[in-house]
Image (tube, one colour):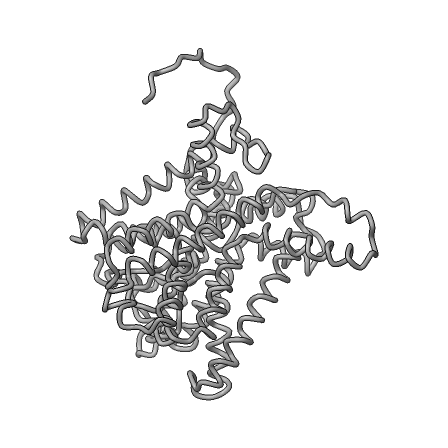
Length: 458
């Protein structure tokens, strides 16, 4: 990699993810990565490496075909890709040298979406601690359940499966060691509920998790009357309030949608008991938020459910998280813009805070670029692989949103379609604006502005 050609954080982030994908592909083509005498074919290895690095979950093969070494390669790609390449490099620098250089700070800040440049080191430490706590807690819960119910053969296998699925869950990867994903646990809330809470927390975004953890500590200290100044602490940030509010709304809409459209479908919820229906509808209502696990057959869902799931996958979760999509805050800002325009309000206000014009333009840019990627990919899959528009749209949105849900057509897509999905998964992970900025020509600041003129709109 010629580093002299890389001039911006966006280019280095894209190049780093690409390098990690290539490394993972080479490791997966080794004979010891597969249970067979030969490793994976280059096309399958490239697709799986991209899927793991971008924490998507789509695959052209059955993960059960991998050896333990191959599974560990996939697990490493999930952890590095989900945590963030630049973030990991910054944490290593903090551990080794107790400081992070200016260039590395800019890269990590661009990747995780940090707002306060001066507190980046503290944010990186907090991200590392949160990741270990959440993944460790989830692994312990799953281990107990796997071991008690003899899901795996022995303590070691149960612990290995629990660790693997905890990392895949928190990073919203959607890659399971089981051929049926989580279908065997459709009636086991002691597995499905911890898993859903794990990927919901992972989808909130590191800035939200760090701020929430800090505020909870401050509140605990205030209640203990050890620091009276903390009683006058500033209100919660707009980013946190927007993310939490939008997430709660979608956590209600998703399960209700699945429950409504799939209640009588004999291939999905129809054959389940009432308790299992509620459990499965909750799981499949929240998993499109880029988690990618499934407990019922996605390919057997009704068309309204598939379309609604595609919308949820396109939205995604919180910014600076392990998720893809255009992010819930982008949707919230666009709704606020629409509401302000309908009411003829000059300013866009949310929670008594005014949204800057630059932020509105950024939200519009992200949405339009994302729609373009999804639409073009859907049309290409329809034209080259003969997929129905519904299946093509679902597959394209799943790849862009780094979700991993599929109607079962991934393995039957041709080489061109697989390469296209590889590109879309990479775009979805780094973000459409970062991707376009990385490949665009070097911009120059203009010292002039053109005359203003108003076209007729609407």
